[in-house]
Length: 191
Image (cartoon, rainbow, N blue to C red):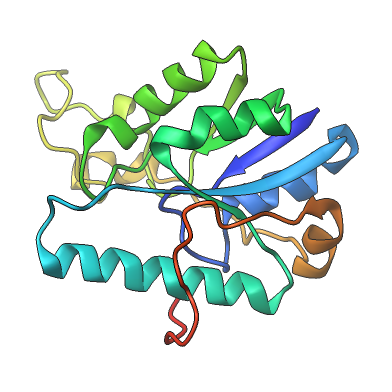
């Protein structure tokens, strides 16, 4: 399998289920690529845009310490990159939302990859409950999903610590390129 790991908004190195998935399925991989698609925040507020890029820069700096260099691309060029790399599968976080536009959310990203005949593997990364399994007393889904609502505490998912070694991930992953020509140097590291 030629796997592209889409690092969209899972900007953490600790207990990252995407990295854990790679360790668990490493024997199935022929090629591994980390891909960081950037959201277009040109029409967002300055504060939102600055926060987003600060988080992205910190995450990239953290990965660089482990000699992991993802392909950096905008969402509109994501399909072209997938074709260029010859991806057969992509691993995508399925339970988080965009910073800015819903076109960057899982259903839209999944459809875009399927349009390129690429198999999408969805991975839960954030929520403590499966959102579709949380119902109110009328047995209707909650209108606003809150992961710690009392009625669903019995369904809390206790996830064990994720195990993976960055040294190993760096050895099996292909080095990426910054196709967006963004400068990520001289920035504070944040997690």
